[in-house]
Figure 1 (cartoon, rainbow, N blue to C red):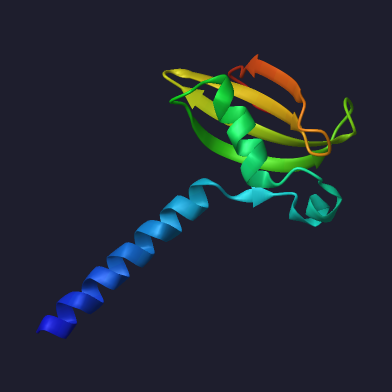
Figure 2 (figure 1 turned 90 degrees about the vertical axis):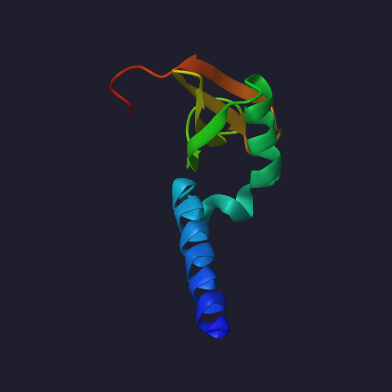
Length: 104
């Protein structure tokens, strides 16, 4: 019985971690070798714009502006969703805008 409870808790914890990981599904991993700024550092730059906010989506993409390689984050702060762009080569903040009702 004790082992069954431990196994059940392990399944619940693993499922919970899977849900957290899916909340931060990362698109653009094929460009990661070209990024000079690690994903975690870019996350901190984005979260620094709205302390207490949370990232709801993230990707690494080629886009005009800066070095041409950027991390793009959707960040929810209160009831407002923001799009934050961080240059993946320099770490510069490239975008900080309110996300409209029709996301790209």
